[in-house]
Length: 149
Picture 1 (cartoon, rainbow, N blue to C red):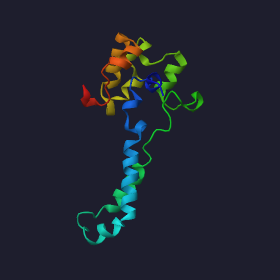
Picture 2 (picture 1 turned 180 degrees about the vertical axis):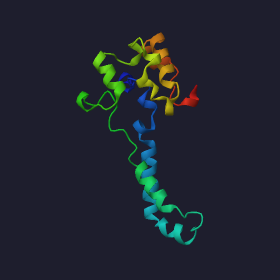
Picture 3 (picture 1 turned 90 degrees about the vertical axis):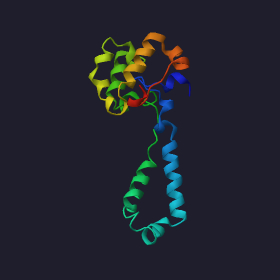
Picture 4 (picture 1 turned 120 degrees about the vertical axis):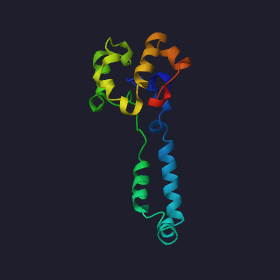
């Protein structure tokens, strides 16, 4: 997949995402398989019952984490199946990313991204607007989490 198709409408770069890479999902899958193979439930129950008293909760979380892989990037999702407000907005306006919109810095839709990403979307979009998409993809600093700033 080329770099342009990994740039989400919101300014995040899917290539930097654990959901896109599947690394966490794969690690969880491998750990789940190892715990099954070694029947670690018995070890947790009999040897470390105090320390691992919540082992069943851990297993449920691990099962959940095996599914943390994006099947497609937002650009690959068929328009009629898109749930993301940002993606819908950009597609409706014919924008490649929000950097083309005059109100992206105050947009309520992007505001919802701040919980996990802080100002990463806005910082990326500002850089994209200044540098252009292709230059940013090659040379720009990519922000992802709030503490990257």
